Length: 166
Image (cartoon, rainbow, N blue to C red; front, side, top):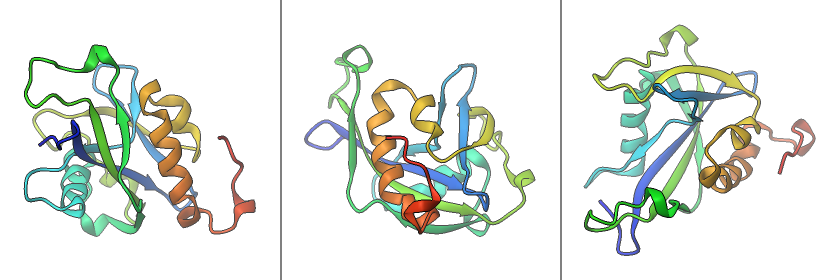
């Protein structure tokens, strides 16, 4: 599903722990790290897509997390020209995302990257809050920065609790 401007609706998931770290996963067979994310299916709400993607990519269910909040607006990024598939219609030029901040409330052993027949990730780890901006592919960095900045008060209620890396 591509909107009239060429953006695919998507959800992003920032999963945090009680140490205020965030979950970062490595794409299968690549040295590419990112947050769980995925497309919103037709007639699916962002919340429904978030829970579906959470399960498909981490094996965690609604009972394993607490939703702390979400971004107030869509955050968009454009794909570099070499990634745009001009032979597909409609042409997708990028993604628009609603980002969710979740807190994991289960044991780390509950994470299962292999619940689907085609896993997205082959490894995961906890990292400091701002580290994903440096780890994610370059064209997603602005959106990661915007999502982390907007959702930061949910994890760090006092500004003094976190160093800025912007």
